Image 1 (cartoon, rainbow, N blue to C red):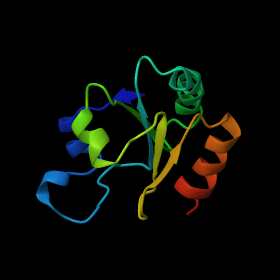
Image 2: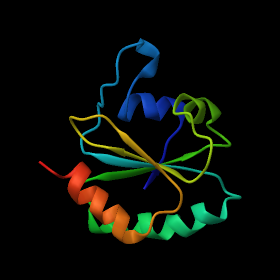
Image 3: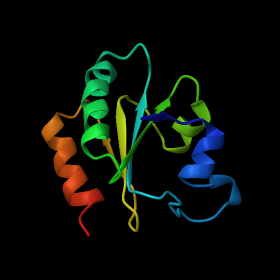
Length: 117
């Protein structure tokens, strides 16, 4: 798992400063976890995502964005509650989910949203 900053987000996900419509530029579909260090449910999701990043290595990427440190990214996505999880398929619109999802929900989203092709 990799932590994203505004600059690495623009390099790996989408360069929003170009003012274009959403165009994912990543190499693989990804999950982006918007979290904060003080958030209990975020801490519950972290080990699930860590394990999934190993199980799906080479198929999807998993990124984390600290909403306290990257407030511009959080506001760009309208993050109001955390954890907020963004599922980003290769050729479709991203889908946001809020709250601590169970492992099964992540697997379902990975198989049916991110890797459906």
